[in-house]
Amino acid sequence: MSVLIKGGRVVTAADDYVGDVFVDGERISLLGEDLDVTADTTIDASGKLVLPGLVDPHTHLDMPFGGTTTIDDVQSGQTAAAFGGTTCHVDFCIQPQGSTFAAALDEWRSKASGKQVIDMGYHIAITDLSDPERLEELATLPEQGVTSYKLFMAYKGALQVDDETLFRSMEVAAASGALVMVHAENGDAIDVLVKQALAAGHTAPHYHALTRPPETEGEATNRAIQLARVAGCPLYVVHVSCKESVEPIALAREKGWDVWGETCTQYFFVDQTFLERPNFEGAKYVYTPPPRAKANQDVLWNAVRTDVLSAISTDHCSFLWDGQKTLGRDDFSKIPNGGPGLENRLHMIHHFGVGEGRITLNRMVELLSTNPAKLFGLYPRKGTIAPGSDADLVIFDPTRRKTITAAGQHSKTDYNLYEGTEVTGDVDTVLIRGTVVVGDGELKVEPGFGEFVARAKFGEELRPAVARA
Ligand code: URP
Ligand code: ZN
Ligand code: ZN
Image 1: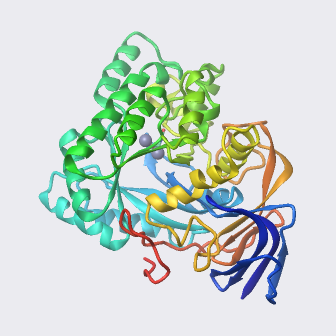
Image 2: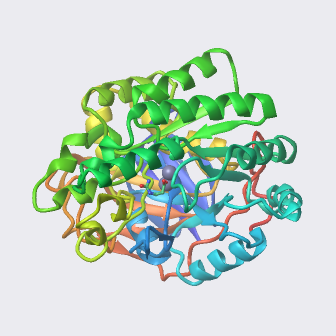
């Protein structure tokens, strides 16, 4: 099957031109002006943007967490992703305490099997290295296409690891070719603050933010950076929310260290006052790190513009407000941490980032697609529009108006962080490996279409010849 996408404005991290994209089978074959080719299907993209499929490097689908399980499984989460122009994501496979990584990956792959709508890979989230065999096993994962290790420096008593586990993982990564990702908050200090707040009778959702001050994020970010420097591994700090963690990342990058940072859509738009919304509405915004003081939003825009931060993810970790968030009605520390967002990253960043002049279109593509693909071993199969790359393409109408609502979304959750926000620009058609996945407002593929992608080691390119996992 071949597809000709005609006359769109093709935008990558580097290019911006009006032209045609010819797709032969699963890959992009030709690019040019007025291509003289015949195709099985022709899509008129005039007046529209043609973007590389977006890559979301940070999602949590079908994940047990906070006494419950995220409401979006692979099928609903990836359907939401596809409607938002995300064609590939990297989800977190969490090692249960005492388990091998192989068993964890088997379990997560079987949860996804037959449900996949878009392409995906896994990061391994390390929780337990007490058995020395785990270190050996960890070193083998990059060969299997699992090329990033995630460690939580918070969530004491659940996912949190100590500094020894963090540092040993970093040493393995330095030798195995993995990228280390950290959830950087000082979990021990936060645990003390949470206990003190509850003892004082402070149970409402806004205490989630008050017990996780920005300094606890800044301290852990700096600690992880320094430890990664000693271990000699590359480091990626997830969901950076505030000035206190932007600053150590900026300093490390200025020194030329192998440190990258990511923020998430919600940190540009939701501030800590949202947690004070009455009738327990504030619980919708209980995610970690918490929404911060509004002044941080300009800091984050500046950081993504100047490449202090290199990616924008969603950290999609969705729960129902009614029935899941309400587990913490009498105790903020029992509200499952996480928020939805997979479907609206492009809408929000295009409208408020590009539309309001904060970042360029090229930079938006870099932040939402190219940089995540490069950092997580997917590039140039994913993350760009070039001959030989997977034909993962988003045809985006920059003039179509859309009002974001929970009622109109594909996630199974019952709320939307951006409810009622009006944006200009909407996804028209999405292709993955040359197949139309979203078109005419409908999902065009059956679950099971999406594939696992074996990712390249850190710093290496993923060429089509690399086998799929
Ligand atoms: O609140 C959040 N972010 N939940 C998901 C787990 C994590 O910390 O990324
Ligand atoms: Zn986290
Ligand atoms: Zn997360």
